[in-house]
Length: 297
Ligand code: M7G
Image (cartoon, rainbow, N blue to C red; front, side):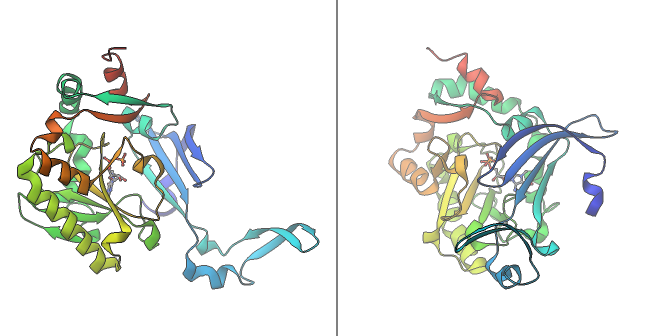
């Protein structure tokens, strides 16, 4: 579906979350004639410097709101083509998608190696593979092949780099890219061991190099990290411009710098099998309920 068809037949069920500061809203709804539910995310785009000459010209129609001495406030109608919004659609959306985009209270949760073994790993193994079909589509070049930034095809240490769903490649300061490892046996940082160091070093070094060649950004301007818990259990690494504010996505208890991960494993080969990890989980996350009921307090 494209163009004006993409939202035809969509009815709003409820707002999942909305953020005035980042001009973001996520909405739950249904398409008529479909059983499942859908999540639609709208984001207003940041002003691009290159469009300023048009924005600040008579092409923008301004209506006076009030004037006081040297101060004036207007409501402006900018040229139509500069007023684009980004629209992400997840259709059909699972309960996990809905909870991911829903406003909720977050709690800090402690995951010992035992909690991981008894609760978290069985939960990860119970997630249907279809949940990461989009990852396999990327690895097999069935989707986003035209957006590929870099590929190292080595089956052990290789990865593919793409712009993340969250980035429309417009503004370098909003740069958000994702490196997806080729091998399919690493679910998350919990699985990382010393023999994975060549893979991790490769992603850090050649991921930064690829972004420098493609976008002219230097490694010092990038945060390179993994999420724990991630939303998708196939190892991937986030590359984000240092000026890009991604809120909870870079919070303590969620984002783990790749260089720290490497350092920890260099110190102790099975660090991530033995460490206790504290993390923030939304109370609507299906994992939260499972872990909470097993906490000793
Ligand atoms: P995560 O740490 O598992 O979850 O990262 P998070 O969403 O809580 O950060 C997964 C990353 O993959 C996120 O940054 C998503 O925006 C990104 N992502 C998700 N999907 C479904 C796609 C996709 O289809 N294409 C691309 N390029 N990125 C995606």
